[in-house]
Image 1 (spheres, rainbow, N blue to C red):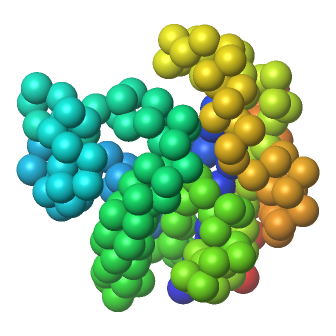
Image 2: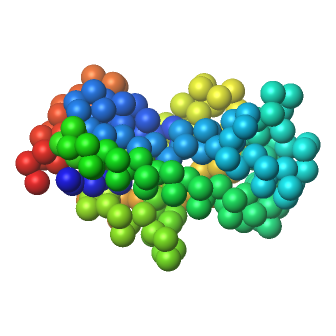
Length: 204
């Protein structure tokens, strides 16, 4: 089964593209969704997060307070590294298990790993690049990313810019891409691009 790594910067529309590929029959393993699962109330990462950062990083319901952790990680590189040491191995383990199950089922024409930090991980010894046959990047201008995230999340521009600055650059993503979907326009303009790649991945 062909394995695709889908990525893109925050606000690029990668989740939308993944949902449309799922509608066309692809198996989807979304690492961002897994990250939410393991930091939800009772999630697998919660005990280590509390041991490392204290109970102050939890919301009243027992989930990780993402706003608090985001602020801490962006202000403290050591905290960011510790967070990643706790969450990334769990995300990878769960993701690979789900990917293997999808492949074994034989129910899908191809498998898509949705990995927001796929490009950033390329140099690592556990690079997602070694697990995928092709990298698909959902692309749009940085100004478009900023406008979308501000509207969607209600974040101030400076905070969105800081998040984008910590991610791989648009140029780096495009340089690593085997395939690109241009999401700088309307949703209607996405469908033909998604259809073309769906057919290509089925025929490879």
